[in-house]
Image (tube, rainbow, N blue to C red; front, top):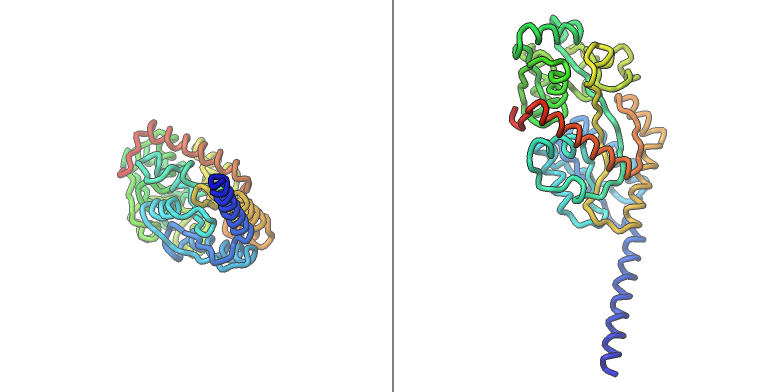
Length: 325
């Protein structure tokens, strides 16, 4: 009899736990939400994140706080989210380089697939190949011809080893079958400063910041890495049009959370992301910045990450690229 009573109390206790969990998930969010941005304030990632956070705040009805956790090409911020409580109150604005380039070059402290719940892509972006306004290179063909005539003499800058503009330069060299010299910097800003000062020959830059520098008259675009011309840069040829096939690559920003979210919390966040990306105001801002609108299906995002990681891993192996190149 006593045993039956103990079992009854235990079952009632479990019922209360499940009821409280369901109630807590159903009330989500009941407090402010953190959106971790794994790059410094003021850059293109941060601009998108703060615009996105305002939209998300309006849908969730709670404050969304943008928290910058920069370092190691996004690895530090991503790892902080991977180790956070999976309750929906800590989110990550993930970048392709952190999930598809860094793991191909080095050991990262998280599993790109199993440490996170994928909630959907936010933007797609291409990179623009830029030279100094006074550069002698008037086309991508000119630049490749110089690299062929003097192997290793043409230099390209990047935000650091393992960044998307590092891999962009390596991919261009690999597909054009030339040798170029990579010059890594601690961030995009010093690389851009040296490009404008003529101390490096070219660099790839994300469409958002490239647009501002082009309009400022300090750099010229030679090509863009998208498969089709970008409406924000209608006169800029694709890399294929400019004479080098196989250099089409697009990065992405996406929404992630620590693995193990309650299902209804995940559904609410997936729905919020889909509503934001499909919204006219946010979509127009993306187009103005040179971004394109992606599919927001979480499974499509997961498949995209796997395909991109496989492609980069193959490039790293075939071109013998090292993390400190």
